[in-house]
Image (tube, rainbow, N blue to C red; front, side, top):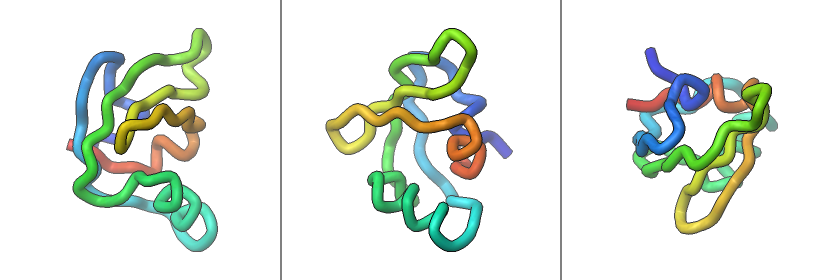
Length: 73
């Protein structure tokens, strides 16, 4: 299983499944990260947290803990 955290800079991945429950999962979905959407990994902070991605034509910074909940292919 590959997660968004494992994706490399410059890579485009597709969201397969969201893990997590309740408010955390809802927040991730509200940010536009839903099943089937393509995500481009733009930057990685020096210490790896957060990850900057481009999704649905806007930039989004997401924490490593949240990125681990997003399964991609």
